[in-house]
Length: 232
Image 1 (cartoon, rainbow, N blue to C red):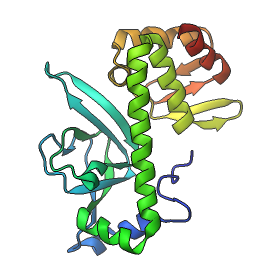
Image 2: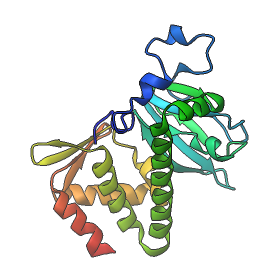
Image 3: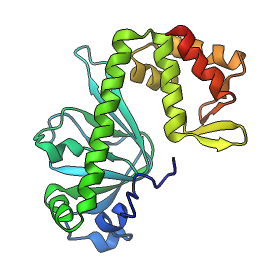
Image 4: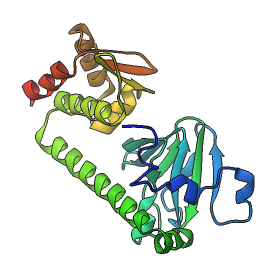
């Protein structure tokens, strides 16, 4: 997957249409590009759901808080991805939070502008339906995994999905930059940080992968996939 794959859909340059290149040119218009510092909330539960957000740079964490106040991560999104899309489908108030994991640049569009884009660019509607469809399938897959698979398998399958969606081939190996923390992986897979750390160390000892705080390197994808099959 390339960095711009979400921005380009059948020769449809989404960023060029929604967000002119210079921030100054956007002043006084409905849409604009805003920079968020690391640790900033883009929105919180109960905020009005009247805009959609497109990531031009950085990383965003989407999640909710459980009854005990524990953070549950639903998704971690990067450059070229969309969030807050349920506003287009009737959501009035946010039910989740969106948080900048690093300094992030976001194009913000109102619903009125998006409606205008849909009228003049029919491909945009296909793009948004594609985004929503992928999100629904991702949620269904995670629910199935929680019900039918153990914690080890869930973590291994998460690593496989991460590599398939964000990995870059380096020779015979696959590299994922900006590797998530062990706690973030635990929150995404409904496991514990200790379980994640134990599994990653085990896979490293088997020479299947190596990792640090900034990157994940898969040395043997076939062996990693077999780990999921064995433990399923």
